[in-house]
Image (tube, rainbow, N blue to C red; front, side, top):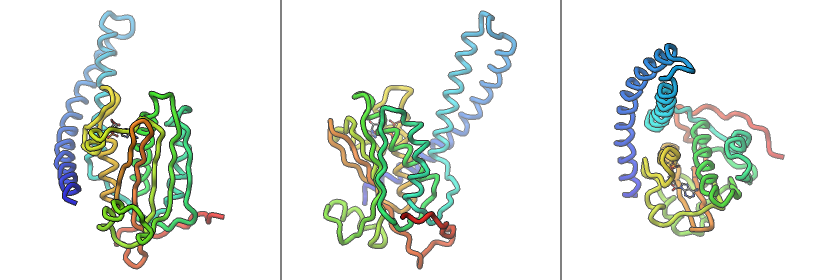
Length: 267
Ligand code: ADP
């Protein structure tokens, strides 16, 4: 619990710093980009200065994309909490995920039947899923691909066998949970790496590829949703991230929760 507190304080501090820097930096970038746009008009293709100007411009675009990621990470987004079917949310993402992951990462979805709803922001769950799957794909790239399994299931407190999991769910309300697991058949992680993965800006990816913000964002979202996030990993075998969310208690809905949306019944 203390670790969690330290982690969330770190996240807050870095979030604030990042938001401030990203905002100012974005203004500076805009000025640079306006000027290079202007210069590119005066020195179009064929002009001796064009390649360098074009290079400045595209670097500026990349810097802009990074700043956007920073802002998305740190901004206190307005959340829209609703009663959510995890199964529907995962299913809605399949097409986007397959497109993003490419052909080498095989995506398998295994849904629990008639899962009870949770209270969450749909787009935040989308972000979590996307970040975990992209990392899973990257962890399998060296070996030319593999399988990503996304699995949803129900979990009843009294039926938990793993004492570590039982302990870490002690702070969560209720006895009934929905879990989302994202497993890959990739490289796995050493204990040293595993200890740092939720730290903002920690990355083992080559420069320009990783920002180190993916898992920090996932961690923040799961915290904000009142859930628990854990990871199991074995070098050479693969990694499983598991998110545990409390099932919505209809008698204790927070005031800002949208009413239940009827979802297609599972056969
Ligand atoms: P990034 O993807 O930009 O590096 P993340 O915060 O998403 O940032 O991930 C941090 C690091 O955690 C990665 O660089 C990688 O070393 C490790 N990691 C994350 N997911 C996995 C995974 N599924 N398998 C192996 N390593 C992983």
